[in-house]
Image (cartoon, rainbow, N blue to C red; front, side, top):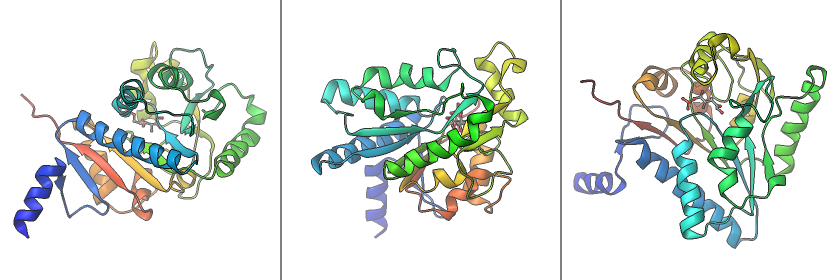
Length: 267
Ligand code: F6R
């Protein structure tokens, strides 16, 4: 039994731990984890194609999923993986934010992913940071409805912020929260400052899918890479379920896998 366990660990290339409250896979390198997630997504897309069905992906921005998108683009270019049956819903967008702005998530998704695959433009959904303030509530309800009409999210990709946010659901977000406008936490704005001229230029608000919208997904991959995420990922996967760490709500759902790379050794 022991030998089998060892063999399977070697084969799977990740360590299995038992003290977390949800399944966690720990990899040596972000690339290995990203490849694994990209391959799982590709397999699901392919299976749905064979059944003549669409697949709905929930997508994140930020540094964490970039390699997953690069892998998927590679699979499209080198192995002919088609995205014509794929419908996507992005988690969030700063508000206000024009599509053309350098920091927009619309731009991010097109630069890293959509411009390099054969997805149908009408199947792409990204919260719109230009909706007039008075129309935001109705817009968010519509976004939520569109996810339902598409059949719900099959696979959701998540990163995690240092506040424990998923999407832009900051500490205090409630478990059943829907797509809505939110205020960004101070730490989140501080971390985002690297993408803007200064912290003062980071928007104070965003439109985000809610915790409730996210965890309706049938499969969720929560990825976290690097030393700076160690503390919050520990709270999210080992700690109690709490509003102070919105990612901890993932323990209430049947999460398929979360991926964590070993912190780099400090020299
Ligand atoms: C982005 C998003 C955020 C990020 C999180 C981590 O669409 O929803 O929750 O996943 O802020 O960002 P990175 O990956 O840049 O560390």
